[in-house]
Structure formats: C-alpha cells, structure tokens
Image (cartoon, rainbow, N blue to C red; front, side):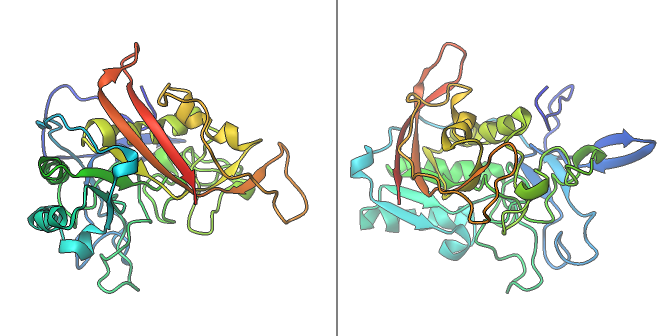
Length: 319
C-alpha cells in the first residue's frame, strides 16, 4: 500500500477519520496524508493559531464527478490569466461567477495559485489569507475556498467556456507546522522530522522543511498528487517554480517524473546547476541548483500507457 494511503470497507462520505500508530508503547493519531479535505482550519480558532494544534481532522469525500471531455488550446496559443482564488472572488463558487468576464477578455487558460490547505497565521490579516505556498500536506483543498467537489465544478465551468486550468503546485517545501512532520511517530536523529522529510543539511529550504526526495515512497506521494490533479480534478496542467537540491545531478531529480512513465519525453530543457558557495560538498556529492521552470503538463485524457498511467506531453522553458 502506498505511503500515507488507507483502505476502508465501503463508501462513507463526509466522515472524519484518523490514523492511529503505536511506537514504543505510545499511541498517537495522525491525519491521512492523502485526504482531499481537512476540517479545523476555520476562523477564529483554526490550526496554526496558538492552542489549536489538535484541530485538523481528515474527511472522506465522494470522488464521483462527471467531467466532460475537453481539449486544451495549443501551447503557443495560450492566453494565461494568473488567478488567486481568494482575491479574485473569495471562493471556487465565487470564481465561477466571474468566468464570463475572463472569457470576454480573451483568456483561454487560468493558472490558479496553489489551492492546498494552509495553516492560519497570526501575523496575516486576516489570519486565513495566504498566497498558497505554505502547504500542511499536498492533497487537501483549502477549506476557505470550498470543497473538492466545488473545485471540480470550477474546472468543469472553465472547460464549458473553453478555458483550460493549470494549477500551481508546491513540491519543494512544506510549512514548518505541517501535518506530515513526525508522521506515524517514527523519527531518528538523522531524520528528526520523520519519514516524509529530509534531515541534515538538506532539511531546511529557508521556507520550510524539504520532502525527502531520496525516499521512493515520498517521490510516489508527490507524483500521485500531480496525477490526482490531472485525473480526479480534470485540470489540464501543473505549474511550478522549483528550488531544489539535486544529487548528484539535475537529471537525478527529474527521476521523480520519469520512473512511472509520466512523460512522453525523457529529457527537459533546464537551467545548469551551480555548486554551493559554502566551499564543501557533503557526501554523497550534492549540487545546489536554482532551477526555475514553467511547466505545462497537458493531459492526454484519451491516451493511456499499457500500465494504465495517463500520458502527458511536456513543454517547459527556463525563466
């Protein structure tokens, strides 16, 4: 079973769930890392504000949704509008109300800033406002914007107006008080953040802890999230500005996209990595690379590989 997945005997929609793990005689409960929805992030006493660490609860949601077929515009014909749901019109449902305005402008693609769940911040006004780049995990939709079903309806309504949807994703870091930290109660001195997160020199990005790309189960967790957006939510692409540590080369880091045959092409045009200016490289050799990519991962919904994986075409440029 994949890392962070759970199986249940039958459909139980809108039900709060948790996972219990016992380590060294201590039993703790954790949220499902792949849950599509979380509760406990609502004002005035949501997760992130002092005294509310126990608030988040995972929710099982109905995955069924009818998404009509859609063909996105060719890459060189895209007119892209970058959209922050909160400042555009507050919620997914609110954004739908203004889609005709975008269509009349000539927009045929919206690039939605991250929609993942963020904690509340006491120094934000209001505390639940965030640009989206502080995820507590990768799968849950930000509750302030609406439910997973409402995001699917947003995508459906965009497609109805011949507008493709690209979603910005955040795969290089998590917020410090994320829900993957110490998952399962298992930690070691070399991985104090637990099985999902790097330890040592690679642990901190400056924005928050870094996922452990060296662990195949974590790479699968990230890949499956991109596939979820394309398959389950029907989006047409994922965009990312990535800052990563690659070892021993950039091509190794791209293995997370190759190893499950997600790309039609095996190589991508990328920036050349530069060595750290700290003067000494740890062993194994680590290259620090600042690689900025704008990737359009167009889903070819009608074309699947032999193993059932959806094939993507890729078009990436360095900025």
